[in-house]
Figure 1: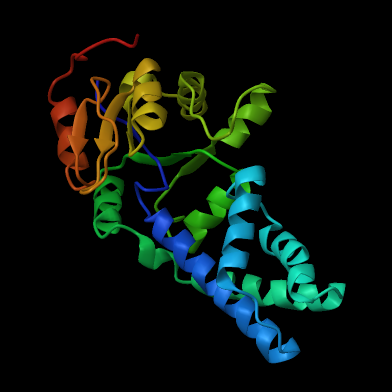
Figure 2: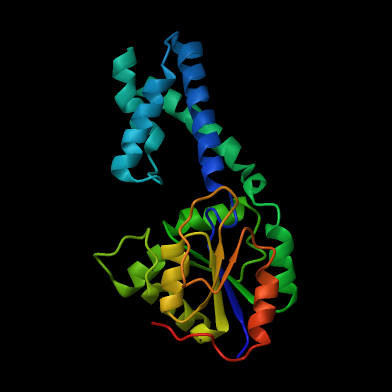
Length: 258
């Protein structure tokens, strides 16, 4: 049996997501501060904006769509901005800054990504994204990174949850059933598929339980857990093509799904 499908995680596997989020946050805060000072002569402390954003994210999730609007609705009265039009102007300045950073999202890709994906694509392998989160946001990220032409399919946990009508499952978690659902979607057995990702419990352990081959990406300086569910471990994606060669040259599976 040979590998036919390569699944890859997005955040922290293909893209430095934390770096992007921090730069976006910094840019949004600076623009909101500048707008308040230039238009209304009001100083908004960075710590107040940053702390409020952190509280809202903690309560409503890191991908909350109305983060900056709600931030200003909470912060505004504390600094003397109460008119809703003025609050919206400051929030809109932060949103514009986020979009400016978003246009450079591709620059946050790890350096080996394009070359590795292109090499796999040239072999005729199906490339699919297996990512946790909100469907349209994850698809947006692929478009921002200009990777859409390299991926044949995109599978987001939110799609799985909606299709299976699950009510007690977080979209932040990739269950073994999620990977089995993907194998059904692409029409391949788990033994013909390999999952590459940075999260041991989400990407590696769950995929292994579903019967996949697994490639654990542990970037230099990261303290990600390692374990026996990883068939291959590497600091980046450059060794993924060789891992697939090793699997293809040894037709017998090393172990069976638990």
